[in-house]
Length: 406
Image 1 (spheres, rainbow, N blue to C red):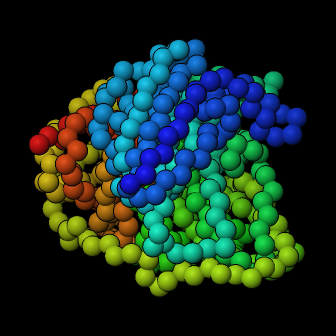
Image 2 (image 1 turned 60 degrees about the horizontal axis):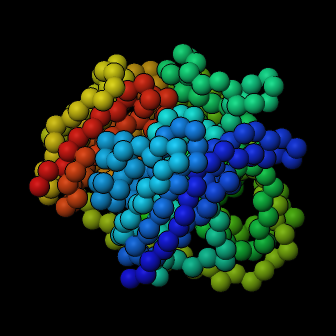
Image 3 (image 1 turned 90 degrees about the horizontal axis):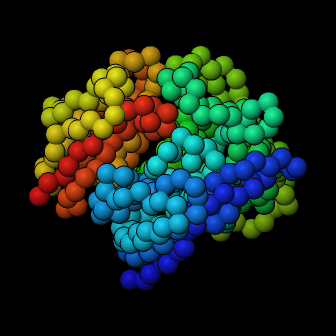
């Protein structure tokens, strides 16, 4: 077992998101996104967070099965005040694509850049010719080119979206890859509220992983929906030298009537190189927790959450007692539901079993539908929470705390 030690300083920084275009951002170690943290399964990660902002902050380890006291919310730790430090320490038990981000005043702190990726590897994973981590985000600017003011009443209900689309903190960058090769792309949707129906100009790719790591088997696709907080791992290529592809978001109506296709980046394919990639037909074994028609032992009404106000509590759950939850969305908008600290399996989506069995920590619940999930509280008692990962909805109270008890 090895150790990974990281120092993160949350501070203001000039963020040049496009040539000649700079805003005053919040950044870990002065860069957006923050440093890529890499580890192997079983490693212990120690992160010393220093807060050099003028407001309190915390850091949440999204998707990592941390101890409750390391979850990085104000329910489990005092906010890290300006000038103070806090040390996070946890073992990473699962391989996958995860991320870290502020969980205090997050609507502003994430928009201004307080997020980064955390990749955990396992020696038995498929091999690729190259790998890249791509964090998708957007910025809302005012007419003067500064970050637009926060607190708009419309944003509370619709979510905050900007016209500047970002990949790894840069506006619509140009990426390059070698012809005839296959890369692993670890995608993270770090946006406040923007849904990304991801396409590579209609070209096929292969989905190999989601929030909780690899799928059981590779899934060919030509598009994939990635909602705020979600991750997806893709096998991209091979393409031919000279091709130019657009990495884009196809129209997806999450309840606002979106009709536009929007570009995130372009991909230029360079000279061919020998490929050594190998993607097996079986990636891992995933056993179903329960049958899809298992009766729920809890119903969560997202509409009620949305109107309940702040700091509501849900009933506790007991270590080792299987949870089957029905997520009911009677509202006119889709809501990405995120649970802290645990993976779940989706059993049904509006009465139908999902097309693939996967471990998830965030799932979209489309408007006027129900989604049934199952999860098992392992032996990590303490305070936890779930919420909509449209950050403005979370901020207005679409969330609840609950205890895991021995």
